[in-house]
Image (cartoon, rainbow, N blue to C red; front, side, top):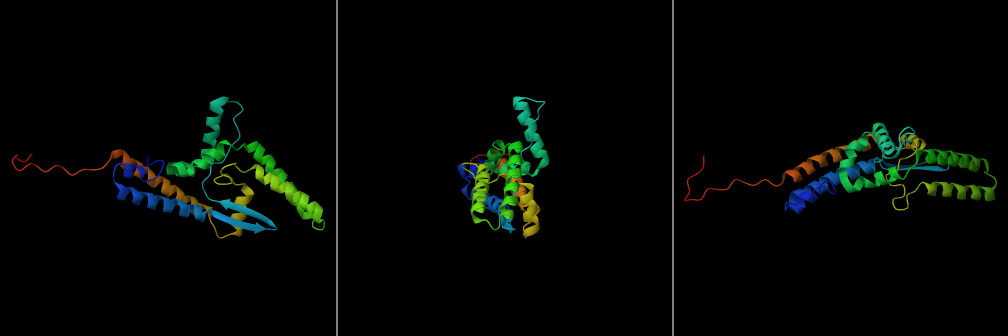
Length: 216
């Protein structure tokens, strides 16, 4: 339970104060890191947006492997590219959207979508004097961007494009490295919270009865 929600295991054990302390401290640290990693930059009429520093990059499938072996190799490659997620994973339910986004993202399809999106933006810039054609291109851009959004989570914890990351790094005061450090520390701290819940509450030794001799 403390894996799913920090401190929940302690609350179920009756240690409500301790569980609440863990809940507040770990979540404040995690969501502050998410805040540090969220930014929006507008460059040449185009908006680049990051919603946080928690995501798992999708990697191409291993063509030599099949089925579960291929998916497992893909997951290992993703963790190799972003080992920070190994620490963030221990935050429990709050990071599961990153896993959902990962499993629903095809890197080949995403690369093609990004290429089409760049072509549409270049066409949009060339049509600066043709309002009707510009509106057509804007509708195509909106359709391409909508294809990347999950029906429930949208862009939340979805792997951003490299161009978006570069734009935010260069055009804002946010630094993604500092953001993921906070979220990783929160996840690692929750490992200790999980261990505390697993070990259970500590009880004071029983006092000997007045009529009984004290045990050595």
